[in-house]
Image 1 (spheres, rainbow, N blue to C red):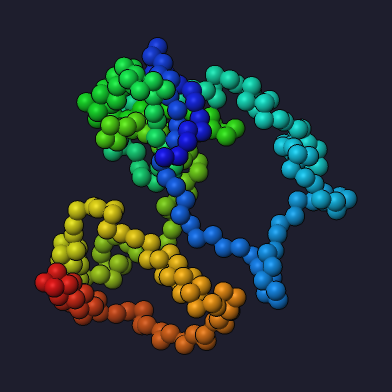
Image 2: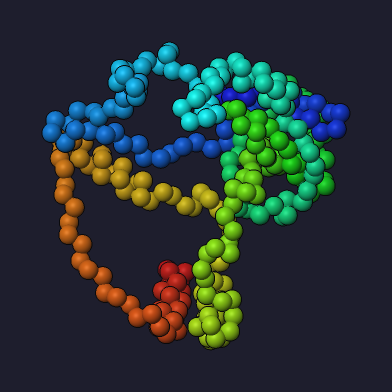
Length: 271
């Protein structure tokens, strides 16, 4: 279990609930080191003074805000923390809304919210009230020097804090060029739509995240283990020349592709 990185309280009305925040996700990205091709020595990143060129150790690095070109105000971590102590220690619920009213595009990063005291009555009160009302709390909280919008959501027995994107952070869908929804302009026939609906129906299931795996990561790690086992820890395989792909016609009959897809899926299900 990850350690709590934030301590404060949830406030709604006059109720204060002392809580901690713990990341609800963990990074599982493939991590590669940069190496010198000649001798496979690690290639590092340098922190250096761009004026003098000298290396700068971490204990001499400070945080500065550029208020004018090449003019900075230096702020310490303690100064940033004291800028608004109440804001940095409170998840302030502003209102309650229905969960389905929030477009999934707004959701960004989830955190688990745990009570400082295991048997917290106020924590249980908020959890029960949210469950029975079918609503989520829209809150603001300061994390890592930035004020964030967030949703307090009940998941099973646990309250979670889902960071939300602000409206101005989302690009308008109007900027995306897509075919018309219906009519001749879309180029889709009624028969094709019906067959596509059949395919969707045949491929429908119940969401189970445990059934899905990062196949690319699994393949890369299998390749790593194979190279280590064979002793080829420094071998470099040059990329093979790609064969030119055949260009497809812009206008195609989708019926044969849909029929083939339906047939393949039917075979899988019967197997």
